[in-house]
Length: 272
Image (cartoon, rainbow, N blue to C red; front, top):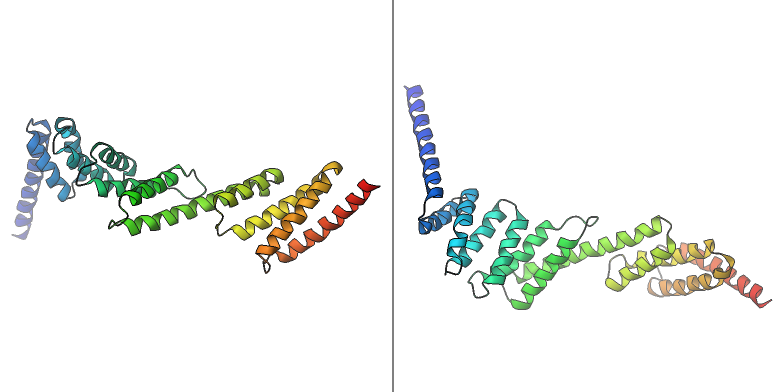
């Protein structure tokens, strides 16, 4: 008896699925665009994002310029978002903000443009174009909606994304040092400090600038040693003035003593 009931239920389920599929296929071929619009919202609310998105893509050109156009783009964006397709979602959110500035969805879409870029932002070692775009979008959002319900989140994401750019800048600059390209390292490290003066890597960057100066002087031809040892001494004073109790102080002192001694010797040689 139980087996028969299970079979009947399975048959009913299969029939229901076939009917649902056939109903959706008929809907796709239908010219009733208002029905498609309503069914697209129903599918979205039921979590059927592929079906909803497909119907919305079909009717989007038909309703362009009507009072439903912005809501169609809005749902298109969220259908992609719910499928973790943040590039397409971001495109539709941006489309909404560009084309429908008076839409009731404008504020949320403006925030979601930045959030989609945020979700696509990779780890610091990779290209940070998406990170930059996310920061720009969030800043524009905060300029337009400083008191929005999403404003605090946007500020937190900007801080997080900026930390990623700081780390990227530091890693790129340090790479020159690791490759013993000391002239390039000095330029890149100084640029990193200029771009991010409050970086958490400030102490290490200033020490690496000092060490790069010293090692560059050590490897220089005789004519350039004097100037480069002097630069080493100057950077030493800048470093210890800001980080008197640094963990790098002992090594910094050693380089200072050597640079000072060789600077004096070279100056004596030049005077003679």
